[in-house]
Length: 364
Image 1 (cartoon, rainbow, N blue to C red):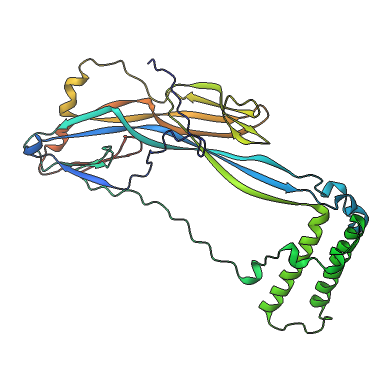
Image 2: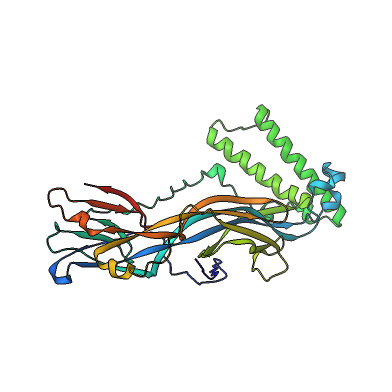
């Protein structure tokens, strides 16, 4: 079976190709085979696309303005201090899931005999076959649970200007400002210790009020401490790559990843290449083309038998992901005769997997 290698890439936020694809089948169309439509129903089979999710983090760090005084005043080693501002990216995870889109090249018309017991076909809104003589309910899409809002004690935010003292702002040199900042850190720690040991005056008896006070002290200490150690904020990102696999591939560049720019295009040499292999496991025997197949289609139901492929994603240094998935393009099609539906006493119901076009179940 000769096929050209055709890969379609989509980076969320970079490209918009394939952006209109819908992978969730939310509506079903029920079509009856009646005299008005010559007892025929047209449907399409799906083809497989691979959704590759790339999860990575972006860390923005800000150097401590008193970093060189961190060891002297706080006893913090240089290894625990951020010296300079900067942004860097880290590749966290790569995963692959299979999805499907209608294959317009596999459109078929199935014609039932007029005496068949009230046959009907359920299709997705894109025309993909779901069932014959049986109702179909699409799988519900899980809804992420709503996160509860944080309590006042857990969401305490202070601005640096509200914490800086007059003594600190009036200090005449950088060294003096660092010294005052360090003193304020130790004062905060002493206040926290007094509260926890019960030695402080006017300690609130209410537990929630106590939490708020301690959160306030923690926030103040963080502001002062980060003047020495610096700060870092990390944000999670996800980009999606969509591929329509049609041929095996080995050590092909899937994307590139840069510690300074994140996910970049395959021709951007600033990033390290991330490769992928796609291997056909030959689980389906591909028959030779049947020139008479077209003549059988109106009286038959064509369905998919997907093949299995092995996918590996890796860099030059380590493996990132490996899985085995079903891909219709590496399988074949078979024919189910409409004579199954001619028994009025025992009507047959056929269920398909709308994502692959394979038969799930045949029941009477």
